[in-house]
Amino acid sequence: MGLLDDWKPVRDVIDYASAGICATIANVNRSSDTRAYSLFDFTLFAEKPDRDPADLDAELEAAFTERAING
Image (cartoon, rainbow, N blue to C red; front, side, top):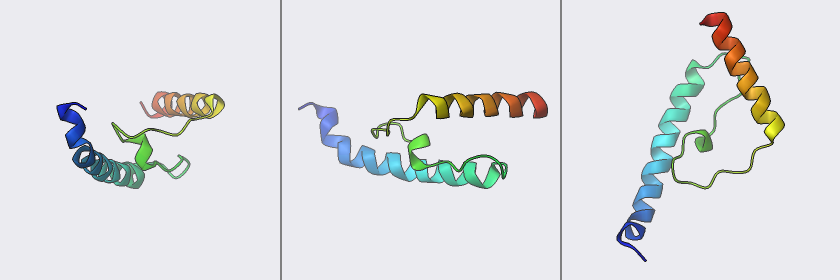
């Protein structure tokens, strides 16, 4: 067990707290046709759930399309 492992509980609390703030800011500024962001979209250290590659492709396509239109 390394020195940084001792800080894991503190790191996790900070990670989730900051992710909550980021998700809140992103959600209030997203367009109504964009999916809501979750904590896992902004966590740095938490294990993220597996994502369906088709969903990821659709999200990327939507992001680039919106950027091209609004950009």
